[in-house]
Image (cartoon, rainbow, N blue to C red):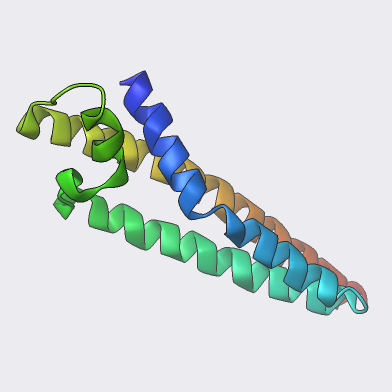
Length: 121
C-alpha cells in the first residue's frame, strides 16, 4: 500500500507541478499592491483546491486501468484487475485528499491575510 501511495503521490505531483509555479508568477507580477497579490493568490489556490476536490470526487468511478499508476505497476508485474484497482483507488484518493487539504490550508491562509490587509489598509 505504501508503494501505491508513493506512486499516486508521484502522479499527483507531476499533474499539479506547474500550478504553484503559475500562481507564484502571477503573485510576483502583481507585487506592486499587497491586497491584489493576496486576493489573486487566494483565488488561484482556491481554484486549485476545487480542481483537486473534483478529481477526488471522480476517483470512485475511475477505471484505474487507464491511469498512469496502472502503467507504473504493470511494468513490474501483471496485477490482478479488481483487487488492484480497489487498492489503487484507495491510495489515489488518500493522496488526493492530502494534497487537497494542503491546498485548502494555503487558500485559507491567503484569504485570511487578504482580509487582514484589507481591514487594516
